[in-house]
Image (tube, rainbow, N blue to C red; front, top):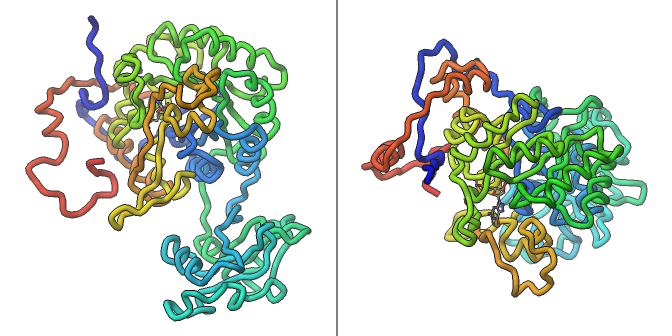
Length: 487
Ligand code: XMP
């Protein structure tokens, strides 16, 4: 029997270097035609990637893949929201209802820091704005928002065909801190804030298409809606479609890749397929026409495939096996999907031969993930669940696990769990640390770019004692580091 290893079993040996972390070029690839300035992609999971996450990922130079636990129209709209995004407009801002009490505005202020909140009726029509100057806390706790808000007729409002430049000019000349953007029926579409204007955030690494729109990916399954979904996503502007299944080395997935590649309407976009863990699987998917192949059977933090089905390959070995499938010769990208716990695992995955990594758990705690926020013992968490968990399968992802025909949810055999992960703040902060770790690793190896990292990589296999030595030991951690925690 062959031995198989994972990230925790191996370490990279340092080499003579003339490269400082800041000099390293971290560009990677997601597929034949999709390059990444930052080799990190957010996973198509319903607690990880909808438009907010995809926008945040693309702004930083990565990519987000919108999950498919949505109707075709809903998923296409998520893609459109990414493609239409203009830095500066905040789509779907947090709002309160005139019927809410001050309590609600105060809660949003405390949790999110927003001091000025649009007030909308049940149809999302803008009816006013509530600011922290309009109430006293806690004296006005139970007062209705309707009583204290500034009514819409007294607000400066712009229509949603306004350019960001004009919106910023309105904010400047009218001395506003928040400008509400509505459609011709008065429905609130977005807001522009003075804070963003002041931050004047430019994103030099943003991942954009030829028309300067952010890149967006979206997932499909192999069921009957494969082509209708793929067409709708492509029409919405998706740059890449991911055939997202638990067992990519199967007739259904190979045929799905072929079917997509055959379609004229999909020729302009790349097709990525997975997940697999062997050389033959990579070869077969490339032969079917895949432009990228996702590697990973069971390494994910929420996966139970290995214990439920007894199937899987530890992730470091799976990547090594996959590289034998000659993806590089065919210009096909290999994506290391799942099992990344620390930034050092990203360095290892890329050094082993992956062109980028896909993350679920490390991004599920981000502000931009769609997971729900929970407070436990005074700490903030976000929900995170496997797409093979009962909850996610009930919402639609059962086809990912070959259980599309099961209608009685009591008969599902889940391959994932539902849980929560620590709230980690904005994606930008998380990626800063992850890329910082990768850059540091590249500096230790003297690697100017990912190709050099792969060429120079020499690994050692470590023992359980080596693993213990690698983590903080014989100490009580008293201050949390932004890039290390035990869970
Ligand atoms: P991480 O470790 O980043 O893994 O949280 C995310 C990846 O895990 C896969 N995934 C699953 N695998 N059961 C599985 O066996 C599941 O329920 C499940 N949900 C997601 C997927 O590849 C994802 O990108």
